[in-house]
Amino acid sequence: VAVVTEAGSLHRTLTVIDAHSDILIDVTDGHTRLGDRYEPVGPTTSCVRGQVDIPRLREGGVSAQILAIFVHERFHGNPLRRALDMVAAFYRELEENAGTIVLARRTSEIRRAKQEGKVAMLLGLEGAEPLGTDLALVGVFYGLGIRVIGLTWNWRNAAADGWDAAPEPGGLTPLGMAVVEEMGRLGIVVDIAHLAKPGFWQVLEASHGPLIGSHCRTGGGWHSLDDDQLRAVGSRGGVICAIGVKQPNLAAIVDQIAHIARIAGVDHVGFGADFYGLDLAPTGLEDATKYPALTAALLRAGFGRENVAQIMGGNLLRVFDAVLR
Ligand SMILES: [Zn+2]
Image (cartoon, rainbow, N blue to C red):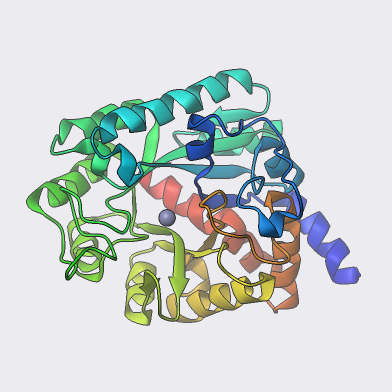
C-alpha cells in the first residue's frame, strides 16, 4: 500500500510521455473521437479499441502523447492523400478539444501543457510512404506540425526497408539518406522503430542528433532490437521506448524496460504503449488510465524516483530539447 501511495504522488509530478499511439487511424475512419471515452463492450483486455483517448490520458496523468500518422497498405494508391486526411482529422479534434489538448512542436509547449493540465499531442509519421519521392514534402509535413518521422513500417518504401521487407531487407535509398539529412536540418526526431537492421546502422551514421525508437521490443522476434542496437542508440544520447501492447502483463513491460536500462543505460529508456495499434493491451496496463500502475511497478522493481521520472518521460523530453527548435 505504501508503494502505491508513494507512486501516486510521484506520478502526478512527472512529465509522462507516451511515445506511440495509432488512435488517429480510428479517428480518421470515424470509429471514435479523441475527446470521447470509448467504452468497449466487455473488458479492455479483449478489445483493441478504448485503450486511449483524452479523458483516459488525463485520468492516467499523461503529459504528452505522440500520435502516429500511419498509412495502411490499402491507401498506398495515394498515401499522401490519406496522410493529409489524418492530419486534417487531428486538426478537427484539436479545435474541438482546445480546452484539454495542444499541438506540441517544441518542448516549451509540452511543459506549458503540463502546467495548464492539458495533454500535449505530438504528430509523428510512421513510414515515409506519404513523401513518395518528393523530398520537399518533409518541409510541408514539418509545417503541419510533424516532429517525429520513422522512415518505414514493416514494408519497403522509396526511402528505406522496413523490418519485414521481402525477400531480404536492405538499407536506405539515396532518397532515404536525403530525408534523414533534411530532418536534421529542420529539427525532426528520427524514429527507428520498425526499420530493418541495415537501415538502422545507416541512419545512425547519417543522423547527428539523438534518435528514438518509439515502440520497440527486445529479446528477439518481431522487429526486435538486439543489444548492439540498444547500446548504439544509448551512446548517441537517444531513447528506446519499450512497447506496451502484445506484452502479457505489466511485469513483462518492466522486464523490457529493465533490460534496455541495463544495456543502453537508464538515461536511454522510455515507454510507448502502441495503444489502438489493433493489438490487445497487457494485464495491468489495460488502458491509458493505468499509467500510475507503471510508475508503481517501476518503483517496486527497484528504480529510484529520479530514474522513474526519466523512464516515464524525462529521457524523451531531453531528446526533444536537443532536436526540436
Ligand atoms: Zn508500429
